Image (tube, rainbow, N blue to C red; front, side, top):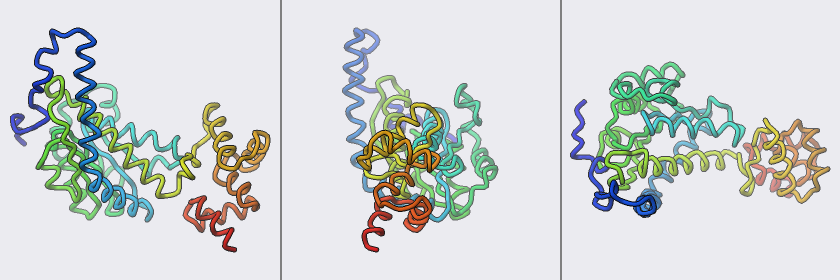
Length: 303
């Protein structure tokens, strides 16, 4: 697949940084900072499409499907990063959110540039994890023309899965293939073609939006607290205690006692305190309310 770089906005030269090699450090930073300010504006223009993508992904996940990211290079690493961080943050099974990168796990740490040119490689990776029509695939590439990602999107669409493209150029092949296209037009990079800069920042922010909103919608957040956090180290144990205290108004001793009883299940501990119910009742309420504490509390009040 031939790629004409002249057609890509992300490969154009930035007129504001033409003499950056002659600038002082502070001058370089000012240029970079000004360019970075354009990223949220580019994202704002795509909020409606991002909304549609999140709602569609949520429907898949709620029915037992998965959110899978695929990409190459910086884009692939960002997808893997977002997926990996969902487990400790939201207590979600690592199977539910996954990131695929061209060249495999090793490409996270050492560039394997040629892997992205294989149109069939992503399809193979998707088959390996049992990807099906129940799942959602989010393809990431600044250019919008990476063969690895295009192949993955085409395969996913063929089997009836949801497909979303996150790109930084208008009218790309990925946008054409995907059901939904999020086009983040951040313009030329400060260093020509270095899409780990503005393009990477834009993609990272959108991934934050996608995974965070999906997790909120499936009940992983109460108020603005990450109530499904896994207390797997000292910091997270203390965070679990703080979340119980913040959400219920109890003292530290009470938080510790309830967390001990529930084996550090923060949601059950909160519901036991807030709704004044037993552990078994709290557990059954949460199951009935799809894991949403607010709904469970409302259910108790209605009873």
